Length: 212
Ligand SMILES: Nc1nc2c(ncn2[C@@H]2O[C@H](COP(=O)(O)OP(=O)(O)OP(=O)(O)O)[C@@H](O)[C@H]2O)c(=O)[nH]1
Image (cartoon, rainbow, N blue to C red; front, side):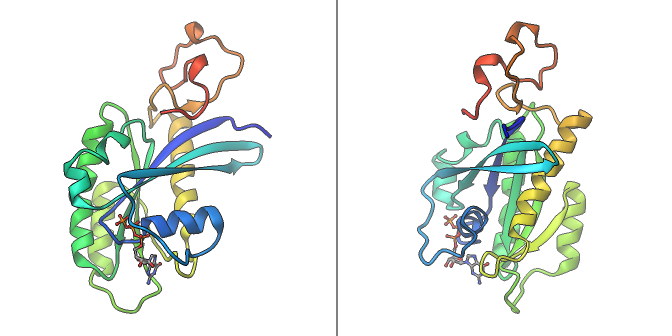
């Protein structure tokens, strides 16, 4: 079955919060034995069925949380065209929670004038030690208008759910008109010439696959 839509998703969060492990777990179904610090950004493709017969091609970008890379513009160029963003912090690291507030603002500025939908992820939730309490996370999530989910790449708890929640949000937002995607993303039209395009959500004919 062919994909009807393509969405770009980006993972943002401080260094060491576990973004790469989350992505690895989602794509491979395992916790990686060894993981290296992400240099700049890297992506993986994945296909998800959002409702019976409707498949979405996802391009998921894993970015480094390393401040130096942000400052040297190695992460920010990957943000535009993203329809969705997983904001990941480590429940056992207060500083990582503080960092996503700033990164959230940068993502919003970078995708402008397009819309990006967020899911907030409290990661490494299998550990007992916590530095961020439930109430403040929920307050933050509600201020962003984003769902909050706790996940663990180590156990696999809620990892697929986080990606799927975000993808379904984008899909529903796209259908309802809440989200306007960059013209290279969204519905994949095989038979409609670009000049007949009336909706800016719809991609041009020569951009119908996942390209940056
Ligand atoms: N306890 C626990 N540790 C985890 C989990 N996921 C990842 N880790 C550990 O957290 C560390 C950082 O994981 P990464 O996936 O490299 O983190 P990252 O956010 O991609 O880091 P950067 O590439 O520096 O941005 C590693 O030592 C992982 O083993 C988890 O669910 N639970």
